Image 1 (cartoon, helix red, strand yellow):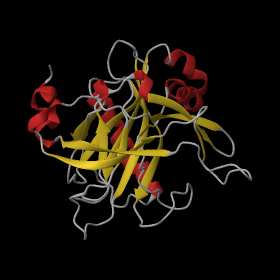
Image 2 (cartoon, one colour):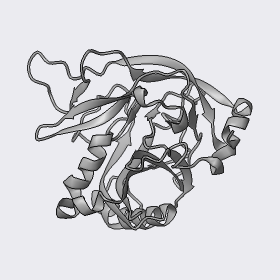
Image 3 (cartoon, rainbow, N blue to C red):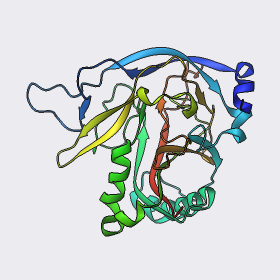
Image 4 (cartoon, one colour):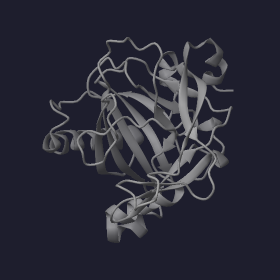
Length: 281
């Protein structure tokens, strides 16, 4: 029994509503643009469940990417304006690449995109229309198929050789301002996720199709968050791992409404950086 399992009942928690995937016929799919006439925007409909989300602060050093699928890290940044795309790419990308390579003992790290989010009451989450809204459904960014496809998409001729080694897709997530009290991120302990909980779902773009995992409700799921994160802290989230030796391969997560959030809390602003992480063995 892990330290986390031994201490779980003593941890403070909040009860929060998390949006799982409602049962659906066929493969769920979501359009990332206005759908064709007569088609719904998405067939991946939410099924809300009230669950305890445990405060993981006191056990922060016990979490690991390979076991739970997430980790809290200290990662100060020199970026002054995360809304300045040029500064993010010139300042944040190199520092994050070096940090992840060191933290994970990787041979190579390739950053392939980033997303800035800001919660705006009543605003729709529209790609390409300014900052995105927090993602309020339980999901995993990649699937077994799309994780490998990311390597082929971004590394071209190198892909086949790189895919012979271990590949991970790791998301580096951080608040832009803090302490963050609004729409924090909840992470599901990967050891409590059954393979049947992960439902491959299509993401349809104007020029391509992607795939992520929606997540079906399982009462065994164990959820954690780190309240009042500061801009010097970040989360490492595992979105894909090619290793099949028993370690956690996919880490479900979601933004959620913390019922203890003060009414005057500043709206959440955050940035996530998506990376391909390569190990020769």
